[in-house]
Image (cartoon, rainbow, N blue to C red):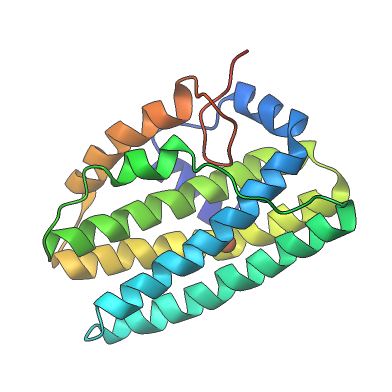
Length: 202
Ligand SMILES: [Fe+2]
Ligand SMILES: [Fe+2]
């Protein structure tokens, strides 16, 4: 295992449950559609940070590159969907992102620190899920998901460093508070299968 992936496993509170992997393999069209939404949303989150924090040059540079990479990922997912005849549709968002954002503070600088921590967690979880899924996928999709690992691991690092910068020091305690929310979102039964959902038990 790469050092980057090891670091992500150490950062996250738990691994993706085997039941979620089974859900994903049984719902591969939905997996791709929601994945496309996630890439688009990741670019959009980065852009909104660029609108709000115009005086933070480091953030502007990191988020601009990140947004470009997420849009490139979006184009790659869309190309795979077209090749496989999977139509892009609207989806209800999963409970994951809303649940994770619930404790974000309303005012800066706390707001920025929290939004960046949530960004780091979502990138880390995405990276962990790509790695967990890849061994079970067909070669084409496995290659694509393995190729996404590196950039998502770097996005996790970028978000975490920006959070420390915004906080003026370590963010471990605040990260732990968010992880206490993340773990049940990943491990407890969910109502609908999504890229970041818990397992759906029927
Ligand atoms: Fe991405
Ligand atoms: Fe990313």
